[in-house]
Image (cartoon, rainbow over all chains, first blue to last red; front, side, top):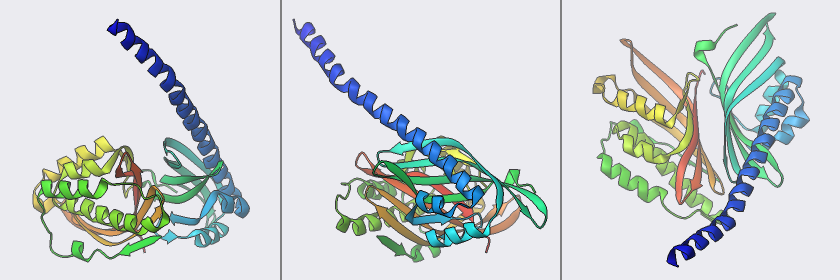
Length: 153
Length: 168
């Protein structure tokens, strides 16, 4: 009798908990897909110099650490972007961690641009931190570090 | 909310703390309640700044347990050369480095830290100087770091960290 009661209690418990686990994993999956799409949009905005898109993607409290170790706020970052003319920007996301309303995206960032008439290819490791605002996500910190072993021009 | 501090204590002579003492302070520091109101942000900022200093102390004291306790299990650490380590990789390489003679240990000096609090997430950013000897040659460089702290299960843990050499 006790064993039956225990089984019944376990069954009820499982019925109550499983939908919550499923809902959480679906939410995370949706968030992951959104974040991957946003990283792609970010690449395109940087490559095309789309200031409006960059303004929308980055939070006003942005902290950006550039490849030379300079810390930039949002206006300084947007100004920097206006002066750059990359031919191509491609990011490969290697990890997305989601903690409720915060997400950390890691990956490798490749850029191609002409400097002094030469095509320069640069590769960086990046970490972007995104926060959820309503139904969307905005990037609040971004940092890039040149990958020394792959540096080439 | 921004909390700034200059790490004067870190730039002086090396202070050796006993590992269990560091761990005890660390546990006291990270266990608590997530601030629900904005007026608690200043307290959180101060707490994160002290946890950053304790991490610095843990490195100086070669205390891998203390380091282990502040890193989230899934954290990825991006080093100054762009290489990426998991928590396991980082702890293994750190233990290996700690086992080397004192003369070969790099010396970290935190120059300043700013902390920005966003509810249950906090960003600590600053600059530290690293001095050491590599392949028989002395080196010195400055690195700008950005640590993302997340309040989870009653503790503040580092969920992401990256360093970039300061070239100017």
